[in-house]
Amino acid sequence: MKNLKNYRFQIILLASIILGAIIGLTMGEKAQVFKPLGDIFLNLLFTIVVPLIFFTIASSIANMGGAKRLGKIMSRMVGAFFFTGVISAIYMLFVVKLFNPTEGVKLKMEKPGSSEEYNIWDQIVQTITVPDFVDLFSRQNMLAMIIIAILVGFAVQSLGEKGTIMKNFLSSGSDVMMFLTNKIMLL
Image (cartoon, rainbow, N blue to C red; front, top):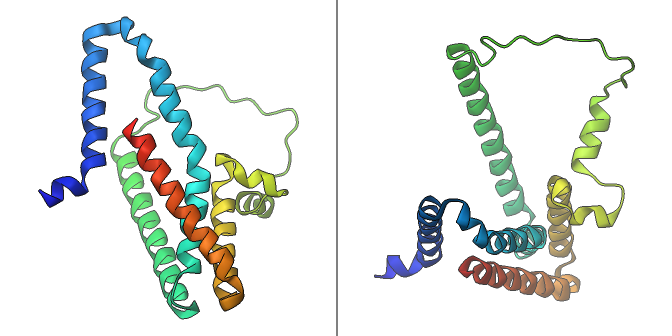
C-alpha cells in the first residue's frame, strides 16, 4: 500500500492519459470541447519548468556538503552524459545503416545565393550563454539557465555563512515549485 501511495501522481497521470484516449476515440471530433483544459495544463507546465529547474538545481548545489562532493557529482554527470551520447550515436549509426532513411527520396539541391560563414565558437557561446538576464527565463535557453543555476548554487555554497539567506531562499523556492508542480499534475 505504501508503494501505491508513493506513485499516486504517476498513476493519476497515466489514468488521465488513458481516459483522454478513450474519450478521444469514442467522441471523435466532439472531444475538441476538452482542448482548452489540455492547453491550460500544458501552458501551466511550460510556465513553471524554468523556475522549477533553476530553483532545484541551485538549491541542490547550495545545500551540498562541499566543493569536493560537487566535483565528484559533476564529473559523474558529465561522464554519464558523454557515455549515453556515445551509445546513442553508435545505435543511430547502426539503425541508419540497417534502414536507410533516404531510400527513395530525391531532392533537388540548389546553391544558396549568399550564406554566412559558419563559426562553431559563436554557436557554442550562443548555446551556453545569453546576452541579457531576462533571456534566461525562456525555455529556448535552458542550457544557459542550467549553467547559471549551477554557478549560483556554487556561489551560495562558497559564501558559507554569508550565503545562508540566499540558500534558504533557494530551498524555499524549490519547495514552492515542487508543491506547485504537484498541484498542476493533479489538474
